[in-house]
Amino acid sequence: VLDHRATERTDLDDEVLAAARSAITSMLTSDPAHAEAYVERVLALSTGAQKTRLEQAGAALSAAVAAQTAPSAGRVLSAGLVTDPGSDDPGSRAEVLVVVQASNPVLLGGDPQADRLTLTVGMTRTDAGWLVDSAVPA
Image 1: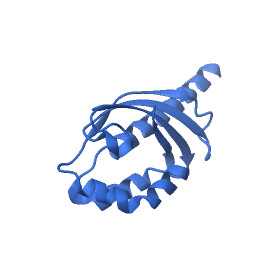
Image 2: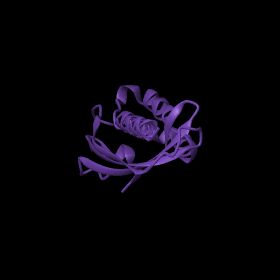
Image 3: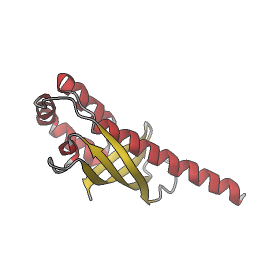
């Protein structure tokens, strides 16, 4: 019984980490030729205060992406749980510390002169899966 619970816990942790990695990579990947699609994609990966903030800043974000001189890309170098998800019930929350390498770290609040960024990413379980509720430079 204990081994089964440990396996379920590991699976849940892996699910949260995979969702955070995927969402942050997507949020760092933009193409000025498809700025509105970028905003739609980022909104679909977000929930709560993060989604509200992005909805309010959608036009400015789209304009910023459209003004890029080239597409941007990012990748997660490392990710680890800061807080455990507890369960996979809707409303459950976990925090993930993520280190990324990005050609445009400004997309997530980073220094434009740096190519690496450390973020604390809040993840909330919704009916659509684990979504980002916050992404704050650490």
